[in-house]
Length: 149
Image (cartoon, rainbow, N blue to C red):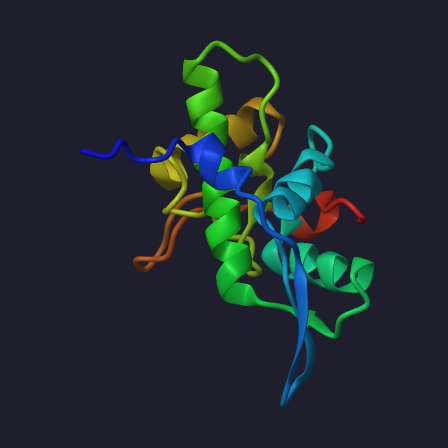
């Protein structure tokens, strides 16, 4: 029976980023470590949106845009790897909780859900607005605490 890969193995999978031509222009398909490296640049007390992340990656690779599907998957892999690292006793991990959805809402698919992300963001000084109408909680005034990439 084959043992499943660790999150770190998935994050560090040997692959190269690709820029492919699409009807919409040049699309970057990043590698997981590119996404992880960008998340590691987010300063404590700051946040970024998924759109910011994708725009910066596209710019860095001279593409028109970045694949939203693979970027979302790689953010999730970075988050799971960070939690795996914490359980292994590492102190410095990728601060995945500092990336929010484009409307300021928290990510329910992160480890521990939106509640765990909210707790970490509160520890860093952010105010969190409660969930409303089946929508996840949001970072209050998130536009004011966004980091420039």
